[in-house]
Image: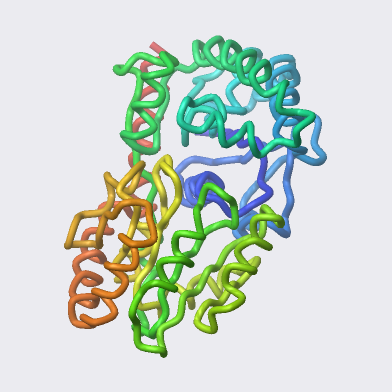
Length: 380
């Protein structure tokens, strides 16, 4: 089968981009990635090895309000050339869905990482506050309008896959789709390639520098924890919010044991994961969260917030720990693992075994099999 995967932008190294890359690389089908915005230097290097076609208006993605306008008004009016494809998958965190309105002649599938976060009750206020004061009055109107268009565009999906039960619940709460038309297929990790090399004395928080990732929890927890002076905290990721990154650098300035690594390349990612002592994860109500699964694939224990997707993937005292989203709770588990190296390794080994259920090969195989079945049903 010839399959097109539409993704709104390839401009960063996020979980959604990783899902698109791994499926396109591993699928038994012929897969082409379609995107209006392709920044080769700032997204995953692996996209250079697969077929990526820039479509629609192209150029810069722009800010939040600009993106909503482009993808709601522009997306709903855009007709893509999809004649050569048997199926099209819309990889969406909200903004891709308007493209279905004029592009649903083939088998039309959604892979939903989350409905638009800015329109969800638990995130609305923080997204509004992140806008310049002059744009904040338009936030409510923009998200209301997009919400109406989002519900309309979801009607054109033949089936929707979601990355977690957490995301499935969001979809159902927004009444975007019926439960029988949703299937959970969790993203994975590169189990075959990822291996632990050592347990050096540093805790790793590997994620993009964005405010909802809550790096400040990790920084404050590390400062509070009573640790051997050899232990360090490493924050590594792409610099997406410069003002937020500057705030973190100021917080870390008076602490010798905190390192910040920006715009980390793939080889360095592997090195950081393979040699860390344990991994931290502090993101706010993450949709799924690939990091806990990646940590497990490297035989590393995880200390994660007890909310969002990690609640599904982290097994308490087996692959790591789920804690409240505050520095005190993180500091307690950081101290415990630091003082119990054998326990850290034991959990790491159990985590590695557990991670095998999330391999990218299994993910791609499940998706391929379901698409094949859906295509057969549509042909009938």
